[in-house]
Image (cartoon, rainbow, N blue to C red; front, top):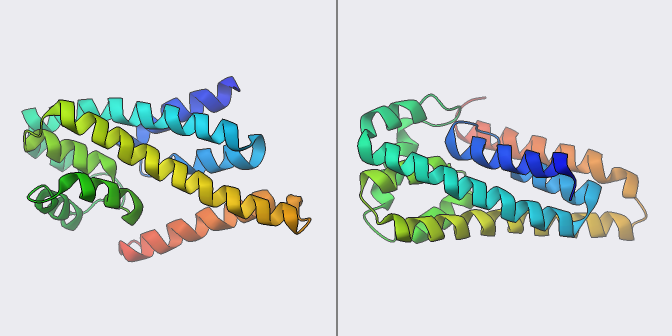
Length: 183
């Protein structure tokens, strides 16, 4: 495994689970395009582990000082009071399902980690659920990208892979930031 790719997955997994707003999926899908499916899946596991471990710190921050943790989360790009309220309310019901669905609907994992601590969800339960939710999202993104890559190879257009990757992520964030009212 390339050390720079591995380091990237570690750093991005930690960063996005705490204060960074761009998802590790960007790196993971780039790894798929440049290095193949095996590399992308291995990096997905690394990023999910690092995100979940960082989630422990966010969990304890939420448990110790929820007001400070929420205030800090509001400083993260695209995080607003409505997202905090949504996550808060989701812990009244099937929070594991909401955590998994939040991963694909644009609700940052870090908000769930902070709220889990504030709500005193047992860490022994939160940690494996959060790892599974992160890994499911990362591997789903890699899987979809693998389908696109296979299509481009079948069409004889491998040189379109990186431009297609760049266009796809640009569109994802244009849509997301538009929905969040940032454009």
